[in-house]
Length: 298
Image 1: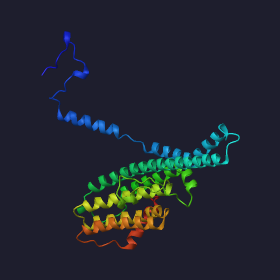
Image 2: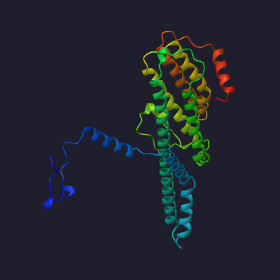
Image 3: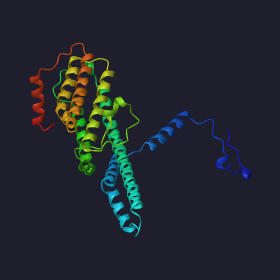
Image 4: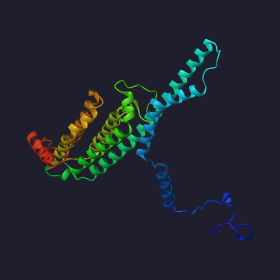
């Protein structure tokens, strides 16, 4: 139907226009998708930069501002000691509140960065796993390229976290302060998949844990593995194990055990879907990994 016209044939004001009822569903879907993509635009490095700034505010910024305010507004002459003590207590509590808010912001931004990186690596693992013909795979001769790509992405995360979170690492030291912020978007049982502190080791370990969980879940969704397919998973995991467990071990021994358990779950998922899950001879695994190491891979 033709659109209604205003006086003199001019189109009616935009506020008075009726929406067309013959719009294409595909066009509407495309517009919604475009709008959703625009809302999801997110730069992980920008979040990490902001987290570094929040860590600076927590460690040095609040104290510097407080010192400058003391210079500009010194205590009044002749004030009673009781009033001075009250003012000092209020100032101290205010500074603690500011530092706590800065720490919460830092942890929130670090968690956003880690989640974005984890989602990217997990999507890469899912695509490759789902597109692989596991039931027709022959005996493995080398580690797959996806294992190299996964390791490189995690090493990149570790390098970025080291560059932006160095101040946070130095300030927190060995005694990490527990903050009130918790990632409320995840349940208590998934607390290992988000950073608990804004440090390099926590960020990297959380990305490792999330990526391995996604890999294990994708393997569980695969219908069947041939013996060669199962052995390929076993070889890939053997290549990743020492490096990823080391990232977990940089946080604590418990985190290293958790990462090791996730790696074992990946192998177990493939074995449960294989009719003949005969493992590779350890000597063969060592020879393949040694050859890869000699070529400069990993």
